[in-house]
Length: 335
Image (cartoon, rainbow, N blue to C red):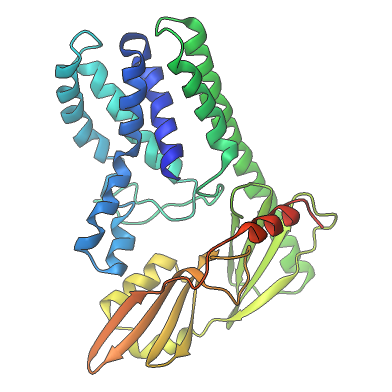
């Protein structure tokens, strides 16, 4: 999830763990604890553009990371605030604020390496977009309210738990939408006689009512959108050629293999001058909701110079604007 969401989640967890003893300090340090796993982005300059994709949400998002880090942070902060909780209390605060970060990320689509270093598989549920006001707002409002209430106030504790409860109820709501939409996609595959090898589904940006499906066949991908406010369950699909065979000559290259692994096979390739363009399809395009003529969010140039292969992430030629947002809103309303 985005940094603001992880901060307010950490802040609310910090308040729940230690707010009665530490007051607003628990909120602030809880928010900091909630953002610590994402500090892995500062390692990007030390890795290739492909490796940095796998470093993010790697060990810092493992279930074992808070076990190692929380005792150190808890000990240091307890020395600063000796009257606001003992060492174990602060260790508990950092453990739970760091631990809940990857659990929330699990529900997004990027992939989270929960069991690193023992198992490098990236888990993802794809039930919520990385920025979703429906989840963030109740946490944010509850944390802001708590800042202005006395730490011993029962109202403060109640408001914080209400915020946590509403946010997690929304998360359950996204799981229900995921299951429902998967059933709709299966019915469309059957009714439209699509020869599907597999498919993935995910919510469109900033909401959980508009969803899209990406269906893989033998030689192409199909992309279609559906709003839960649509009058019909029928999904109109657009087609993309896979072009996977274009990568055959690069198949043994380590960085290419890692790139394919990152996409879990949901990618296309096409020719360009001096090489190939490689698109990860799982995150859509930078404009519209899935305009296949636009730049993909994760897109790479693959070039071979002499015997060396170079992979560089492509810069988007344009960014979303208010017209894209308006079109998104209109499509959410249904057709």
